[in-house]
Length: 130
Image (tube, rainbow, N blue to C red; front, side, top):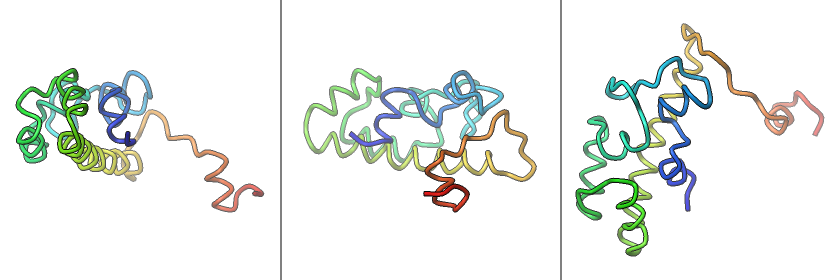
């Protein structure tokens, strides 16, 4: 199990719906990649045109059905399917996370909330004693 795979399987990641409804860092559920009204893990996995190239590579291995139950079955089929799903998740979620960070830290951006910086990070930056 990888971090990005867990994000896609749980829907808790850089998805507009999750960031808006649960985290509160986005004002809407919109997909920043394609403009779709609601960005979910399923949208990213099966529908968003921005990830067509990565999706084509995934479909070549696991088939056309990219519903969550079908993807879970593909993960259980073997190493080839597992690697294809993990590769898709890593590539796409890494790009989505980078885009989220750019939006979050853009000078002209007015996010709803800023991420909390944990004490471990503060200690590493020298703001707290170790």
